[in-house]
Image (cartoon, rainbow, N blue to C red; front, side, top):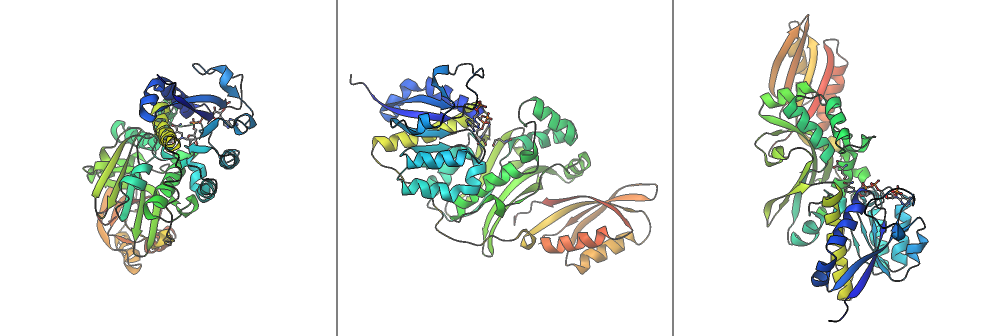
Length: 432
Ligand code: NAP
Ligand code: HSE
């Protein structure tokens, strides 16, 4: 039998994701010959520290010099799984200039500099694939770009951060407070030592920017995404949400409306019987609506060594098949429109507010007047508890303009009858 051709690959980074990629490519080595008609061989791995213990990773493949990879003409595919903005950005651009195809899992970089990276890939006639950058192991970039390409997509909504979903699940099901649940997430390796990007909604915001760009054919960067995290969600919020038949989830929402594109990440009350409410622990799910297909949902593991490695290897195989057929750039940048992005204050939402007020006659009427004067229609108002002259109110509004809600809250915060506005959380409605 003829010796199969070898396609040589280099890894930039061999941490969580890189190790998963190495393991999958090693155990799939023989299968690859059948799947792509060639062997895929990792020949070099870039790391910062060559002396670090790396069980299962051959030390002879390690280098701390990027030029060893760049200047090796036999390396055709570079897999960037090192993370961060620099030097990852420069290394990817240089790889294209040196005729290499690139696979990346780097959402931070793509959500910011995606345009530049795509243009460099196109100029150099190379492929640039990044399935793992959004929702880890869940196939979503390829479905948006390929399988659903016959649709006019109007909505992408999802739970795209496993750490925050794990924390909210523990708060909901085990009655933990935020701090306890975060500590558990850190102990289990879901949350990083500095959990800011996850708990403040930044990680989810980057993923929403990437998905919205693809779904609506318009370049959306992270700075276009409104983000709000889960640090202020309390056990009381979760309890009251449950009483209303709802769960609180950190949702990413991207909608293409006649007034422009909305892209945001914030906590939301969603009905407990909604499909996204059943997404528990560190799982992710993405819901997509298209004019032809209707509703679709993608579910699975949004992070971790093997799930994320699975998405990266899928991209590597795709590029290897292109190499075998002598083609590239079949599916490059799909941002051929320039739809404006809507300001958050122009969006419409229903709101849940938990307010601590003085417990005396006339307070409710005064609060209702502020909302009424600002075109905020109240759907429900309930007094939850009253102790020593203080009462807790829960207000649910109809679907109203965010600007009107912000104006109301500013006035309420300046009133002596209001002791504290403890929470403002948006509520999912069918119009969302
Ligand atoms: P990680 O565990 O921190 O690993 C990073 C690797 O890159 C390490 O091997 C590190 O080398 C190497 N590295 C970092 N900076 C370098 C530099 N300047 N020069 C040379 N090597 C460098 O990161 P990860 O969790 O695998 O994440 C990698 C990427 O995948 C990130 O973009 C992340 O956002 C994305 N991602 C991760 C997940 C996940 O579940 N972890 C899921 C989806 C996407 P040393 O080992 O020598 O320090
Ligand atoms: N930190 C992310 C999460 C995984 O918790 O979902 C990497 O994208």
